[in-house]
Length: 160
Image 1 (cartoon, one colour):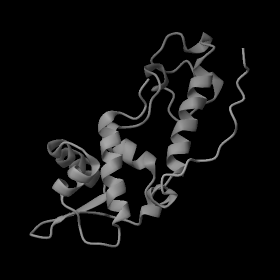
Image 2 (tube, one colour):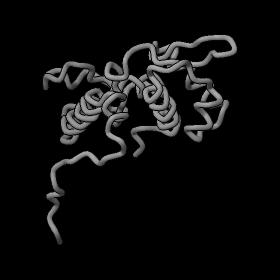
Image 3 (cartoon, rainbow, N blue to C red):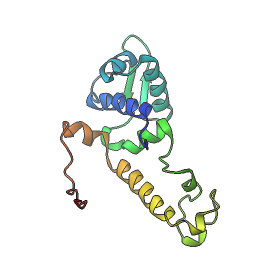
Image 4 (tube, rainbow, N blue to C red):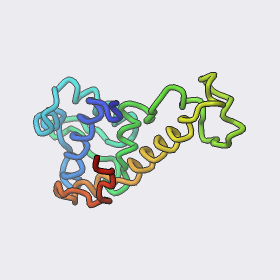
């Protein structure tokens, strides 16, 4: 299952490049493509989407290009993901739940199995966790991490 698609990965590379150079002048699409190892035409399309989402500003002219529209500490990974691929959805059956999670509202949606599905609530929780996690990580945090691994809980899977 791919949660973050290829174009979103490309967009993250490009916008992180802008975050690294936040206080500098604007950066051209060609430079972003080269530094991020992204095809140039795809870079242009992705930058347009990021511009439409008001995550970057564009400047014309000889020194033109792109720059973040706000401080990297105020841009989350979730904002970038939504700008490029839309909201994170684990399954089509979850798209009808909206923000209402009361059990009596589960029957109002796309899937006719909603009321008796034993997995649906867990998938909703997982989807919310993914969205919350992506929303909690800012570009600034990634830039400052210098490629360090995030310390997390040890793998508690049982050995067989």
